Length: 258
Image (cartoon, rainbow, N blue to C red; front, top):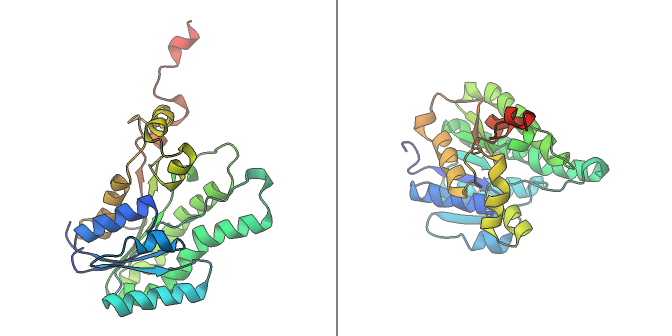
C-alpha cells in the first residue's frame, strides 16, 4: 500500500496477538514501529530492526509523554497511532466505580492523552489515527457492561476526533473486529483455536474466528494513501457478525411449521 514506507507508527497494545500482527504488517510495509505495552517481556520480544519497545501504562501521563519522546528520539517522526490496548475488566451489573474508571481510563482516556501528546507530530506529517472499536459496541452481551460501553464510546470519539483534527490534516478512523484469535481467546480456551472457531461459527457469517493478520490488513489500509479520503468511519472486520443480527444464518420460518 502506498504511503507507509519510511513512516513511523506508535502501537499501544502492540505486544498482544492482534498488536503483534499489526507490528509485523507495518514492518513488512517499511514502517518503523514503537511498540508500547505494560507487558514488557512480550514487548521486548518484538524488538527488531525498525521495531522498538517502550514500557507504557496508558493510565500514566508521564508514561505517555515518555512514549512519544522515545518514538521521536528513536525514529525522528510520528505518523500513525494505532490504539490496540484495552482492558477486559468487566463485572457487568456488579462493576464498581473503581472498575468503571479503570476501564474507561485505559480504553478511552488513555488514547486521547496519547493523541494530545503526539498531535503536533501527527499534524506536521498529515498522519492518521486508528482506534479499536468492537462488535461489542453495537449489541447487548450478557454480563458485559464496561467493555461494550467503552467500545461504543470509542466509536463516538473517533467521529469527534475526525471532525476536530481534519483541519490539521489528521485522519481518524476505527476498526471493529469480530471474534478474533487474540490473547483473551487464547487464555479462555487454553490455546484451542479449533474450539474457538467452533463456538464462533454460529455468530459469524464466515463461520470462524478472524485472524489477527486480517485485522492488521484493515489497519494498514486506513493508514495508507489508499484511504486518503476516508475519515470518521469504522471498518467492521467481523466476518459478518453485525450483518447477521438476531436471525442468525438459519431459516426461521420452517421452525414455525415443525
